[in-house]
Image (cartoon, rainbow, N blue to C red; front, side, top):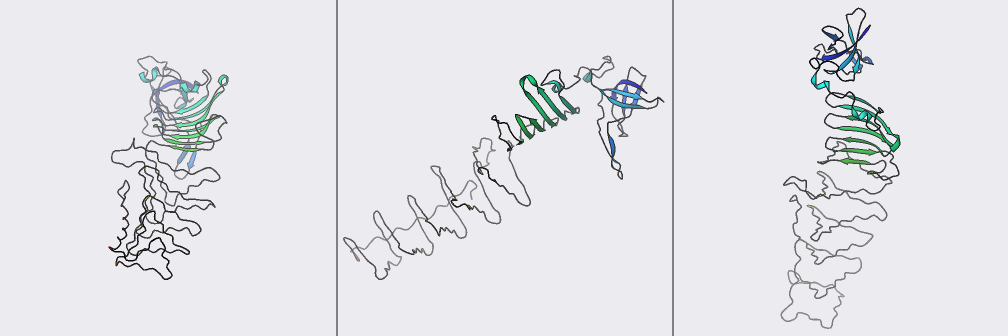
Amino acid sequence: MRLYEAQVISNYDFTETGMIQVSSTSFAGNKFVKYTSPYGGFHDPFSGEKAGFYGIPSKGSLVLVAQTEDEEDYYLISVIHQPDKRSTTTSIPSIKNSKTIPRSVYKLFPGMPQQIVLSDHTGNKLTLSHSHKPQMNEENIRAELKSGQGKKLSLIDTPLVNRIILETEEGDGIDVTARQPEVPTDLPSRHLRLRTGGMMQTLAQHGIDMLVVDGLEFDIANESTGAFSTSGLQFGNVNITSKHKDVNITTKGQGGRVMIRSKGSDGVVQINADGSIVIKAPNDNIYVEGDNINIKASSNLNIEAGNNVNIKAGNQAVMSGAGATVSVATDAALDGAFVHLAPAGGVSPATGADGAPNIVNDYEE
């Protein structure tokens, strides 16, 4: 068996068997070389689907090939990573002055190879890094899969950055941290962070459960000012909508409270319903307080107390009926410095309550 150093002049193979064509100063003419790899096997013996490692050298690569004793067949042994040694007239210009090994292999500790890299000519790359700089106590231990455009999956075991990162070339992605060191970092231990410059959607056919167990709080906040919104789109709202059934907000704690507050100078709290509105507090008090309070019923207004009904006015308390009739039950007590019954000129009727304003949201609803 003879070994030759050669250069790939073509990897086009219409038989799709991995055949490449090479030339060399060690033999005359061009030779067809059969592809070999460190591993192979049948994945599915019925369909012929094979298992193996497939990395056919690119055009221009320097390779080591073996010739059989009968001088009929040539086999690929490996790729040689060194500058092109052939003359300018026979070499491929794009490969002649290229670097032999990616610079990142020696990046953290110059001269000491600390990475294993598998890459193609478009920039798709698998990197296994065990970089370490003893003098600076720096480590860069990671497994990283990266596309030619910059999309990246990083599994990082470096003590100060112990996490999984999935991100696009724009920087949008997901960070999942493992146990973090005691020194402050940008994320705490066992933390999940989603980053996106655009919309974020969660779609599920069967349901979505979000649960905090023995931790801290569950916060939903919108701090958007609309700086990145498209003209005409709404911003700053928090919307909860159920198309077919209820929206339930429940607190089950002993001291649990449901707090709805609008703290802006022109803030509004509005409850609208096409059906009933029911407010109950059977075991405690209900308070309604405001500058002017209007209670208006299209039909009847019924007020009942198990004990007393107390009405106090700072100025006048006026009660009138549409038929100018006000009924007072028996055993009624009228008390005052002066009690006027049917005074001359009559009494002005009570002023009716104002109707509720029809306030709509930013969606005109």
